[in-house]
Image (cartoon, rainbow, N blue to C red):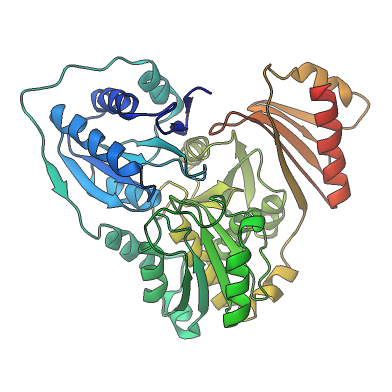
Length: 443
């Protein structure tokens, strides 16, 4: 297996495809691409991240850069700080939702956003520069997440007082990751009664790292046993949020953006240009239409969504993996912002969460994956549907779209796999799309 390089940064298995030499090389190149100024350094809670983190700090110092040492904080917090403090950029040591043996680097530009495709290409193809005689220094930044929390508590689109008045009981599972401290403190500031599980920073990851329904059994039991109003779960670097309803049922990470979007459009400001990616649920389109808004779709990947949001001057967007992007805070997927938007929806609706879900558009999505040693023949796939009334979108893999269903096949940005995602009105219809495509690809 090789080191994965994409618009999401670099990722590999520690001491196999990722090591100190590799992270130092790319950190060196990154400094040469950024404007003068201090560089933020952060990480998630993976134990092996500490050694990589310290090595990167030494590299940045040797290149004459001051390092803003933030330690374990959520990736979105790092993004907010860079934008708020006008830093040169940042590096987050994380493999996000990948399993514990993985780690990687996310590179953040001077506006707090991921490097765009052109700049990322320049980074990945660049050569390291000579160190300088003028060494930088480490500047410790304790509790840097507090500014991020303060920002969220002052967002115009959220009725903080109404949330506080409800005194919601919230079950919380941060998978012992980067949100272990920041998200509980935000919920505490919102006057929530918090029931915490897996909320320390030892990086042991007691469940699967992706906050998908099959990984949320502990959270579901906690919601039921404590009669919580809602349950929240994050991935290790806290850019994604998943939700469990008040009966302990995981509702699927696709629903996070849908509900956050409805919170924003219904209770704050409709008639928006909403941006999401090609693999995100049709429910986004339904909600947008209800509030006189339109949906534009980008290729999969946070920076692709963000670049289109910038282009269209969009105020809200995200991805169907639980990632919500709110321009008023910063242009990056943010589980803390998502939590506040969801609680705002719950407070404003003034009904139990399961009752909100009854009126939320719902389709069945299936996410599958395969490992292939060869490229996919998209022309062959198109020929399979030549007698159907369909449209095609090609560029980020291939998406085949019917009036009431779709299937999307693309190479993953973060794992050595081909992803196949389908959505339809029923499980059977969605499954048939996947089965038909897999049978013709593998054969």
